[in-house]
Length: 356
Image 1 (cartoon, rainbow, N blue to C red):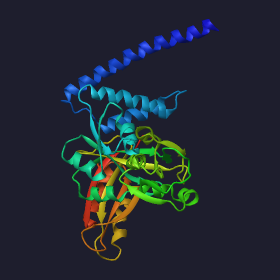
Image 2 (cartoon, one colour):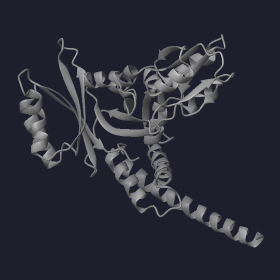
Image 3 (cartoon, rainbow, N blue to C red):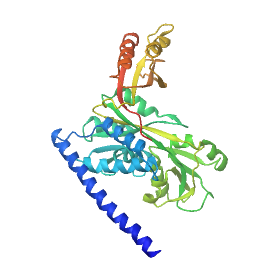
Image 4 (tube, one colour):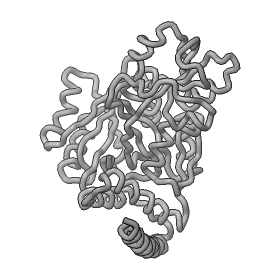
């Protein structure tokens, strides 16, 4: 048995040495590309293509998700050789938005915590950071209105999306579920755990916060020892809290979608999505006219969300996601027709479909 163990260990050591050599060879190529492109080496479409190829060619036993995560970190480290990407996210430390930022950009990216979604937009608009990551919708709680409203006004482009499986937990210093009088959390987290709260803590006061990690901080600093927070596991340790109840989200497949915002969108990757804003002219059948060009050119719509335009009373804009890149032939034709029929049309950006 000892000889067999040593044989495997020797094999691992040899493979590790080969992996190290190959990873550094890859890094040299990344540095050379960075020099040729004068440092502008981040291309969302290229990274998406690489991650898709890794998942398609993965023979196991590592899962596709694990293999993609490893290569994401390799790409992140290679990019950082020239200049680490700077990324703003809704903080503080321990939010799901931070987890989404790390999932998309890797640990080598330089992250900046922001106190609100508005601040994330301002940091990117002011070129203080390269990119921002903001939540846009949850499979249980629905759309994040603040993000949608800011997309209406910003000159920034959507250049990526991140899909994150979300588990909500009840955090507290100690004491289980006994004697809890107040629970802090983000409004989206309350919506995702509505039924659990009604069943287990029906009379407890609920206080909305800017983020679930901020909720954890407030629960930790509450001196009354009657406070708890709903947040992710990552928010527990930084604030000295413990998990009192695991996975309290009402839906087992609770998932949040995040958008990556920057000064540019992405080139075609082969599997893309385009987000846009539009409003209908004030006449009968106007909304149907807006959808007709998509059907006529065989463009699939995956999302339709209405929001008050904040310009005139009872006027609405529609947030729409469609399959394909705005440079694709049939999508370009559909958008050209839409621009004639819509009272307002804004292409927010085209970007690779999230690699799960």
